[in-house]
Amino acid sequence: MDDLDTQAADNAAVHHAASEPGGKPSFAMTDGGGADPTHQHLFHLAGAAPSRFDGGDLRGAVADNWSVLKGQQGSVYLARLAPGGVREPHWHPSAWEMNFVISGRVRWSLVGPGGTGDAFEGKAGDLVFAPQGHFHYFENASDTEDLVVLIVFNTSVAEPDDDIGLVESLSAIPPDVLGAIFGVPADTFKAIPKNRDRVVIASKNKEPANG
Image (cartoon, rainbow, N blue to C red):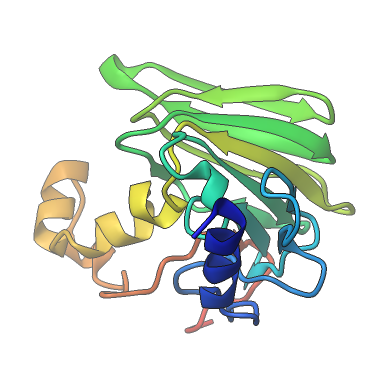
């Protein structure tokens, strides 16, 4: 089986409908999107079906849906955050992250070892680098326009396989432990949902479930 046959098999294995909000991104394809069936080095990223979330959507080119990336230690994502959209705070244990702002305004925050941190705003044309293992998140800094960011990782695996999110982390820690760490009553954290799906892109404009 040659590379194009392998790519065709990979394409056939990818679900052809975008995922529903929440859960694990599927990086599905639509007609005209995803890996090109004729040219193995071409991927139609903007035409790939998005995984949709409350605060935006995500399209990805990874080894699972673009065979040319297998063994190359590289993957690319196209993220769109609507006004109020927030990328769930998270970190990557085994990959750094390079972000290029295509359009809109972005607000970034990073935390590294030794209490180091950085918070700033960026605009179209800016690059933002998140070192491997650094806790970070970004959000749409505009109330009126979408934020579109191209994200590059030095790993070929899908981001969910190298992503530890805030929701999963806090959900795994008992309220009494969180209370002891933050120096507040344990009841402060009892409203945190347990076993919740990954958020990925949240929306500050969405009403809380109990609100």
